[in-house]
Picture (cartoon, rainbow, N blue to C red):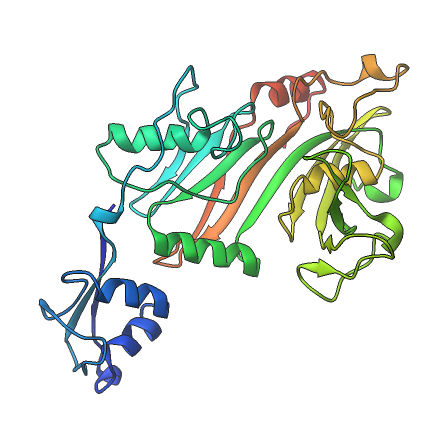
Length: 342
């Protein structure tokens, strides 16, 4: 989708170069400005194409093209096969937020090139006759439901990704796990948050499975935001920080809400398993269930995890946006059976 930004030069900017104004006033990166200046009419001052070294004066109007239509191709095949209608939670000219159902990949991978959420979004853009690249900001596992955010231009994508890395972008999950948490991890006020800092690594016996290394202790905080010095004989570990709050406990299962400081593959699933509370329905990390408690647990035919809420700043106007995804039927049925509500 073609997008331009228009800016009127303010008095205190007089004498600055076009590039400095674009970087300081609009927050554009050097690379984004460079990409625009090599396009026809990519950067204009008072309607005329200009150089980034040109000097600006008060009330000059600068227009920069941050996304050219000719580069905005629908690069993914539209969704093939039966699919739920795309459930849009929010949309404007820069971003699109949808509620992903369980059972569908976020983006093409392996043998799935035409039946992912990204393919479905591509089909949605195609029907609207909008030429727009599909840029998911993060992803959810195939069996996880909930909010997935897409950027409609490369500047939005870069800024939203930067928010994820800096902690401005917040995502909150709901999960149903096996077992009952101890008394000291639950509070009637539902305000007690607890933290797990076990680093994570890939396992050698499965291409998808991850594992948490608990030798560090749950209170360990690595010096690096990305990596932890491996234990003897181990491969490099990824730091991982998960915060959880117990909302409901029964003798055999619990409801928790979770927030992440890091977005590692299967992080919630791995950390909950490390605590002795694997997610219901998660056959990758819990293939057997205790026979004496099986009948007391809700039945989930997929991993019981839902990306419930997100909060972030709009990539251009900086306004806070908070979104919530309705609970899917399996969660609703579970909550209704115990008269529980969020």
